[in-house]
Figure 1: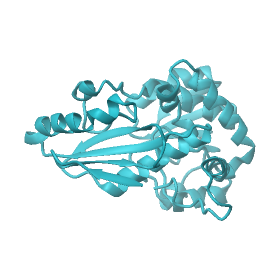
Figure 2: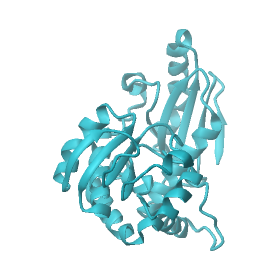
Figure 3: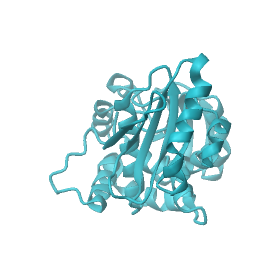
Length: 280
């Protein structure tokens, strides 16, 4: 992991893999963006691409600025990273705290959240065949985004509800690690499906695995927008469907199976330990 601190403003860019032709990620803005969290997001993106056989590195950038200084900070950030973007080495989409028009000078399109919702729906269906579902966490818009695609994928009702809802699928939308082991112990669903990266902690995953609940890796369920960036002419949702169908027989071990596949592609040794990468 390489973290480049910018000289023109209080900002940084974390790039996970050295020597790759391209790195893809998001830019977040807040008074204080934590480097550790950015590194974890970059690593999650690396694993997502590796799961699909793509040697593209994850990236994650942070701009530290208070509201009255944000405009100048974003302008300086764009100017300093523009060379890498123009050369195709870096693709940065707007994340939390950044409006798409603010990154317009970089020419990088926002990640398509609607495409992400569709991918998550087909991934969930591969594990459960449909059924009832809730969106837990930052529901709101996600219920509207996922609902039609969940129905198309064979699902029935989709509501915003509690994590302990008696349903087939719990879709999770929120910050990294917002579901801990105590919350995971309340889950009754057959499958847990991320709509946003790394919504559960490592301890939460252990709880789900012991309970026989499938955690669909976000490296698959959230991958469609990333795949669209890598291959605009392809069909990212069908690639997500195929990957999910491949992992579904692993059931509660699906996340481990994803890690094994990604690390084999990346060249990790046989003793690589999956816990903590990529989980919050």
